[in-house]
Length: 64
Image 1 (cartoon, rainbow, N blue to C red):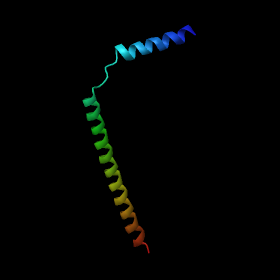
Image 2 (image 1 turned 45 degrees about the vertical axis):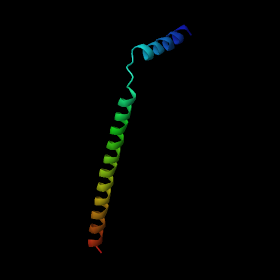
Image 3 (image 1 turned 120 degrees about the vertical axis):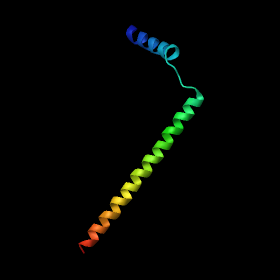
């Protein structure tokens, strides 16, 4: 039981004293970058899906 207490005590000390937390401005900037990248990648994948779907419909209709 002593090892568990020591582990949590040292983990808390590390989080409080050694970890460098981002500022509010840095956090907002990082969030914005992730949001823009997510929207961009989603749009690219959606466009690729639409293009491949359209191409396959044309190919399938050639066989009729």
